[in-house]
Length: 71
Image 1 (spheres, one colour):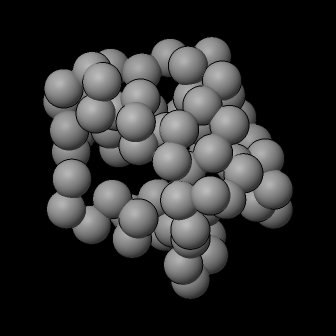
Image 2: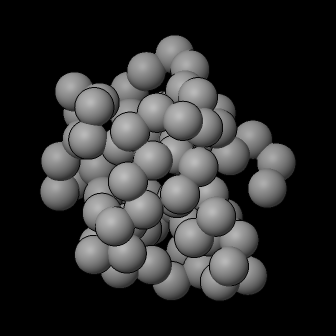
């Protein structure tokens, strides 16, 4: 998953992220951000995610593991 952290950082409107960062800790975290992540994962990784699955991931690491589990 090349450039995963860079892409997610752009969606979250920050310069960089750590795998341990909690998703809800970002200022840009809202329903539109979740929709952006859904669209990004569908386009880039050909993985379908639900808003609920993303919310349950809790962290950047959890999100990455979720995507990998669906590939």
